[in-house]
Length: 80
Image 1 (cartoon, helix red, strand yellow):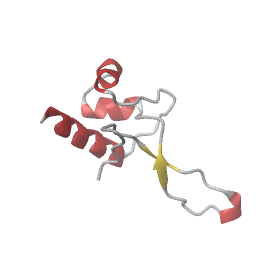
Image 2 (image 1 turned 180 degrees about the vertical axis):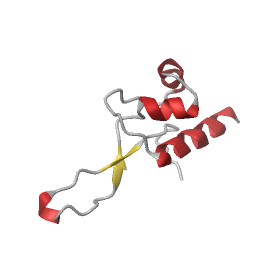
Image 3 (image 1 turned 180 degrees about the horizontal axis):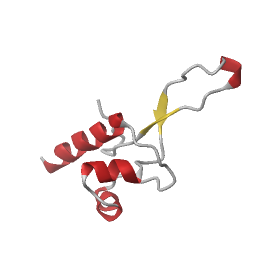
Image 4 (image 1 turned 135 degrees about the vertical axis):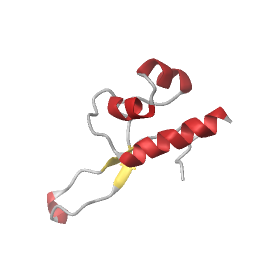
């Protein structure tokens, strides 16, 4: 379920809508990192996330449930 690249977790973000595809929902892609709101929902701050190797994108403002779920899975996986 997790998109692990060398034991790293990546955020999923929506692809941009293109006019040539008539504004259809294009799907998801790997993002730069998790937003501050997603980290806060899980209960960690930026320092702790970077220490754990979790990428953080400070420019993102959206919060997606699938990213929060991925973070929780990753944190439970890393604790074991």
